[in-house]
Image 1 (tube, rainbow over the protein chains, first blue to last red):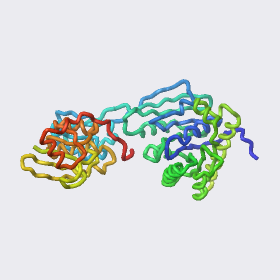
Image 2 (tube, chains in turn brown, cyan):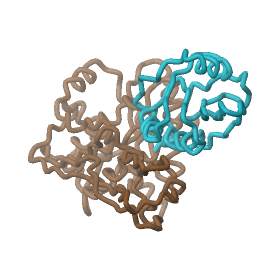
Image 3 (cartoon, one colour):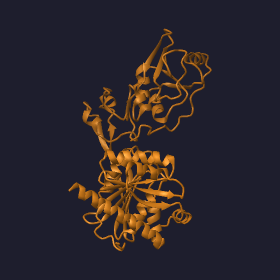
Image 4 (cartoon, rainbow over the protein chains, first blue to last red):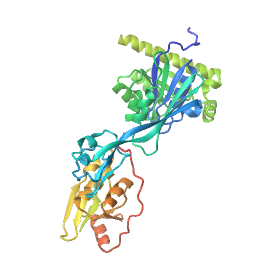
Length: 296
Length: 122
């Protein structure tokens, strides 16, 4: 049997996702990164990033993330409303006297400024959030933060993913909950997806959502069952029925709950937890290798 | 003068729709001719910005008054910029609410909610 001693040569991008918040995405991502020799942890849950609460990274480098939004020169606007009719997101309205731009609704496509026959619209930068990069022992921590009220975290996620490990190295991507655009953007470059599931009927429904997503994207995937009890686990049954590999099980355990609630990293607190996430890392690595072998 | 009201159906007996942005129809009632017209609200199916697009429809209808149970902040910005007055409806038919408005019994809509954004998913 292989001893779990080193993670050298583990070169993969793993995305961790779930159909809803609170299933354990951050628990799994933070601990997998912490259990590795070297890793990059990227928190793409830009609406409520919390991985940094566990890592408490140091030497933070901060950068603002901007998007382009239109501004109008009222002297040039003749009220033709081509921009209003064009905007798929309804970010513009014209009252007959003036053009109103809703920058929080704007998705920065630039179409209105391109289309305006009077050249009344130009674009300017608007800060929608920031990225903080720091170090926590063996882990480089990247956190994206979307400013409240902004429409989309995608520009932040795109930039965050550019900080993934280059060449050899492990990158763990902590995805936003659900299966909407921001989750899609977060898994786009992943080599493998880990779906975290709770042992309830509701959990099965949420697992089904992300299962559909990863199939749609043609990503290899496996499941981590979290909060496991002795009794029947509907999510486990779903995996067996659907033929989804179960990569690991995390027990419903008071000590895990307590350490986690104290913002401590399980894998850094106790050998037994370190081993648990180490073996999850190895199992995942084997799955990725297996997929690569099938592809070639 | 024209009055706009979100409507569940194309009938004066229909209820006022509880949603402004995603109402299926708008009643446009002309106080001078007594005529009622129903406009389809194309914004109802939009992924986002439904309130803004619905407000644009009301502005384009030429209405001077909007009767609605509630209104989000983005829609209200468009409505108010077009100097359309906002009044709050009660649970009842379009006709009942129009009658109440004519008798001066509808209060001005004071509370503008922060919007129900993101229903279409981004």
